[in-house]
Image (cartoon, helix red, strand yellow):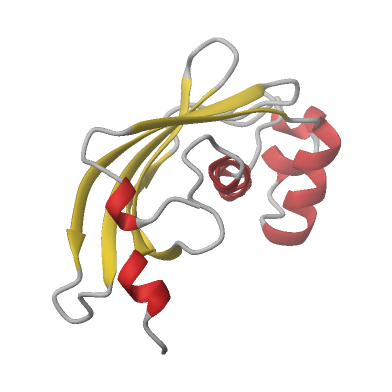
Length: 152
């Protein structure tokens, strides 16, 4: 795991690839976003999407999976503090293979808890055609080495 002290503005990281199947799209949508363009390939043809499309929330969940497995090594201690922005400029489709590119935009010590850092990260999710399917600006609470050594 990387600590706050190991990070710098401009640091980049990558994650993936992760393949997306029709079964996964339908399964996620069935539980969390049951709309025709996420559930039924035939019905989806008559919608704005013109075919089956993953829920944006499914794309976000896939992005999170790639963040955890990325070369940034941000798993195991970083806590999500929220998302400032999220957009889905193109739909994720069955058969897509996704990957992420991330960059640290800001890193500062917490003013309330100087044993922790706050890291602002921009993450772009791309498909196999290098088309952007999601952009996200997220804020993470980061452990510092001093915070790990300090009892709670």
